[in-house]
Amino acid sequence: MSWPTRAELAAKAAQMTRDPVTGEVAAIRYVGVYKAFGTHEVLKGLSVSIPRGKITAIIGRSGTGKSVTIKHVMGLLRPDQGQVWVGDDELAAMSDRKLRTVRNRFGLVFQNAALFDSMSVFDNIAFPLREHTRMRRAELQAKVRDMLALVGVHHAEDKLPSELSGGMRKRVGLARALVRDPEFLLYDEPTTGLDPILTAAIDELVVHTHHARPGLTSVVISHDMAAVLRIADKVVMLVDGVLAHEGTPDYFHASTDPLVVQFLTGSLHGPMKV
Amino acid sequence: MLLGFLEELGRAARIASLGTVNVFLPPFRLGLIIHQMEFIGIQSLPIILLSSLFTGAVFTYESYEAFHLFGAQGYVGGTVGVAITRELAPTLTGLLVAGRAGSAIAAEIGSMRVSEQIDALNAMAVDPINYLVKPRLIASTLTMPMLTAIFDLVGILGSYLVAVHVLRLSPPEFTVRLQDWVDWDDVLAGLFKATVFGFVVGAVATYKGYYTEGGAAGVGRATTTSVVVASVVILILNFFIAYFVTSSVSG
Ligand SMILES: Nc1ncnc2c1ncn2[C@@H]1O[C@H](COP(=O)(O)OP(=O)(O)OP(=O)(O)O)[C@@H](O)[C@H]1O
Ligand SMILES: [Mg+2]
Image (cartoon, rainbow over the protein chains, first blue to last red):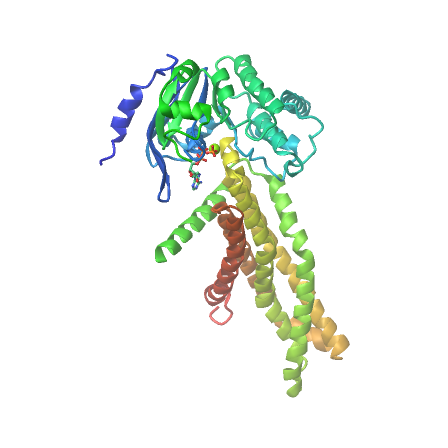
């Protein structure tokens, strides 16, 4: 098999400027992305677009490469083959400086929160502001407190991440991603491991944040099918490192494809084996 | 095997050179540098004080016997002084700091790698080299000669105490040769070596931490190998610096 050239990939990307599911402009495009760790191939030619201004959900089994996919958008991982486009720019072709400006437009909520364990909750959330803005102390304090209130974490400003419960860490991670008003918000399983009430609250927060910020593009990785089908504009299903299905929630509801049915109903019987 | 070694070397060179370049790139991270100097310097003080005091003491005690045979016990002060300032202080300080601070640095950065905190830095458009590597590299390079200078002083103090109070030399007997034999060249040669060792410890620890993979076990491996590698490099470099740079024989 011969790999497509850069020009061929770019030509393919040019045909993907509109998202087929929502009709919106594609804010992020994956074009034939391959990624392996050692001999373990994770992404095997993934091509998919993320519509601007919409909520896109990525679903798929544990280990299919959802987190890996999301990490490619910000250049945290680099494709072995293929291209990732953010707007009109291809990531691999960017200078470091350009990559930094792109990263500054993103907020990423890590699956495991990835809080800085040597810093207090307050300092964690203030970190991006201190690094990239010249905000005054009072303003900074107000902004951080707003964020903490927004995600419902109280009386924990001075705590270290190791002193928090998993759910609280997740919410602090969310606050840290939100604090700079990014254009893109990427959530890697924001609700996995939270109690049902918190889960509902975070889902609500995702939707609320999305609609409170016109133009925000949200991407949510989630195993919570009910929530995905309720809040997403577009759903992307990954199987075996490629796009298996994409469509609106209605499309997924109506689908009779055994893969989709099995996944949505969480059945042991079907094409996917445990 | 050879390929693995070359890859490692490449990574180490990459981190060391990027870290060095970043010294001149903003943000300068003064606060973090000072914090790291405190961590490496102040917190290494107790172990440096203890080691230097006893190194000076035991070295004096052992060499006294030999000199005494020839009735040349007056040479003790000078001999110990030169040995400490040129060799023992920089090398032992280097090894001790590699064991104490280098391992801690590798463990800290390594655990930040495996818990995705380094990804988080990148995701927030903060260069981890500038934020994590540079302050530690600078701090360790600057702190090592300071600790070595302290080792010099306390080591000689230890030697003096043993010579005068245990071996019953008269104070002038000890100090005359010390002043005669130890000159600034010896002290500076030692401090120069210490500076190089400081850079080595910082570079090895940060690069081992930075390229950690494989969870908690990986952090453990990074920690151990950072100490081993830094120590071996220090011992090897010590010879080459003595041979090519600071040697009084060829000089
Ligand atoms: N840095 C890495 N080094 C080696 N292997 C990796 C790395 N990151 C991911 N993988 C592997 O890639 C595969 C996909 O991982 P990924 O985290 O993307 O899964 P996921 O779809 O997010 O699963 P989950 O729903 O459990 O979070 C896994 O088999 C994982 O072991
Ligand atoms: Mg994941």
